[in-house]
Every structure is written in structure tokens, then in C-alpha cells.
Length: 60
Image (cartoon, rainbow, N blue to C red; front, top):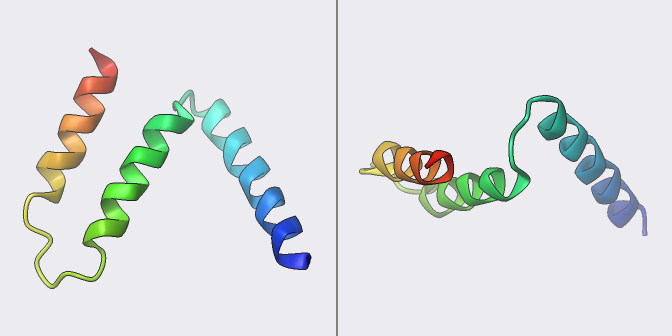
């Protein structure tokens, strides 16, 4: 029960920060998902390009 309450508080805080920084929460989640898929790799080849493509597609 405590963990879900803490998680919801963290989600609310994150949402407030993203709103203040004028960042789309969906974009942020996409970037986090890409990062999570590469976090355990020794060489995270292509991650910068992948992140750049996601950001550029959200701008266009």
C-alpha cells in the first residue's frame, strides 16, 4: 500500500515538473522506454540517434 501511494506521489511530482518545463508526458515516457531497453548493454549503440529521432518527430 505504501509503495503505490509513494508511486502516485512521484507520478504527480513528475507531471508537475514536466508541465512547468513544457514537456509532453507522452514524449518523456517514450524517451524513458528507449533508455530502459538499452540500460544494461555494454555499448548502447545508436541510442543518441534513436532519442534524437523521437524528439524530432515530436517537434514536427
